[in-house]
Structures are given as structure tokens and as C-alpha cells.
Image (cartoon, rainbow, N blue to C red):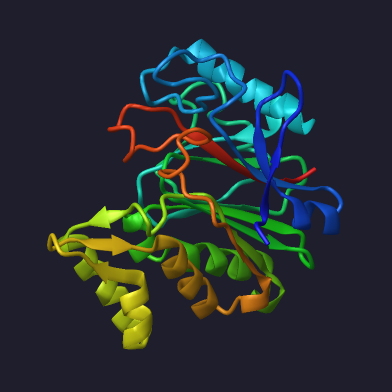
Length: 281
């Protein structure tokens, strides 16, 4: 069953929420924005939440405010970073709460993984094909969020985020829930030898069998490859100790669905950004 459920309400942004988590754990909020329900004009039509794509900044901030209103949380709770496709994780405290929501200069710098046990902080990361990774420990009441493009994935940002949860807050992997959100799928994500070689290195490091490697990297007749980042991240999350039955994986492809999502690859690099969010209210 698709874990990200579309939410449509009159005069509000169209959102995709992790319905099972939110129903099972009161106070939990987690989801992913679409491209609809905002105020940005072409080519960022209309719910662009990225300040770094040459959209009008006032429109982006308004879109972010609309997201906050739609999920019923104070705008001051939403915390953003400048992502760099790395594997550094930050523990977000009250001191960082709300950073980056208004300007890029005030954002948390050079981080791609975020964890917190503070209620009232909404962790946010921006996407337009990369993989959003969500983590929740219902025992220790810890949430995590990671931005995993191919670079972050092979740098094991997923495992770094889980490790930070365990070392900082005492989370146990067997208690952590994980969700892999909308991203470019294996149906659309063509990569070259350089990327494929890095992926093979990671799979070799974890002792992945040949049939799994072939599932994640599929050769094409043109000498390139189709890469399944969602399955690769799932394998790495399992390697970190999270139980398979605690991992949700979307079937939504951003490149196949530019009617609903922004896609950097499909739209030639000039497009908006969605926001993945997670927090305990």
C-alpha cells in the first residue's frame, strides 16, 4: 500500500502525508509537498519551496507559510538547511529552531541529515528528484530526515542519520521506523559509468549478492544504466539495523509525475523544489 497519501483541500497546498504514521502516533506530522497550491509563477508553478532556484523570494516564503498553515503548525517551527549532497548530520535544538525559513543566509549550512527530540521543531529538506528519507523512533520520541541524492546515498547518509539517532538519543534501530519518499525512480534515472561504479563499491562493501546489484543497476543498450536509488537506500537502512517490516517505500516517481511534482532531471534543471517535513508537535 502506498504510504504517501494525497491530501487535497480547497484553497490549500496539495500535500502527501505518511498517513499510517500519523494515525498510529498522535502528534507526529510527516509528509511531502507537491507542486500545487502555491503562488509562484512559471517555471516554478506553483508551490515552489526552494529559495535557491531564482524564484521570487517573497513567493517562496509565502509558499512555505502556506505549508505551515495547511498542517496547522507555527511557521516559526519550520527549520531549513543548505544541502550539499554530503553525509553530515546535525542535531537540531531549540537554538536552531526556525532557521532558514525566511532566507538562505540564515539556514543551517552544509548539512544533509537532521535529527531532533525536541517537540515543536519541524525538520525540512528540499527535493526535486533526490530521495527523502524519514525516520521516527516512537520509544525515544526522536525524528530524523535525510536528503539522499546519488552522492549522499553512496556516502551512506541514511546510515549516518540512524547512527546519530542511536548515539545521541539512545535510539535502538529495531525501534526506528523509516520511510522512503517520492523521488526519481529506476524507470527514469539514467546514470553513467562513474555513478554506477560508486554504487557497485557500496554494494560490494555491504556484501550485496549479484542479483540485488543487478536489480539496483540495470544496464542499457546505450552503455548507460538505470539506477534504483529507492531500493539502494532501503538496503542501506536495513544494514543499519532497521527491520524490513518497519520500512515504508513509496511507488511515486517525480520524473514520471511532473503533473504533481517538480523534477530537476525531467524539466531540464529549471524548476521548483518540494519540501519533505517531519516533526513531533
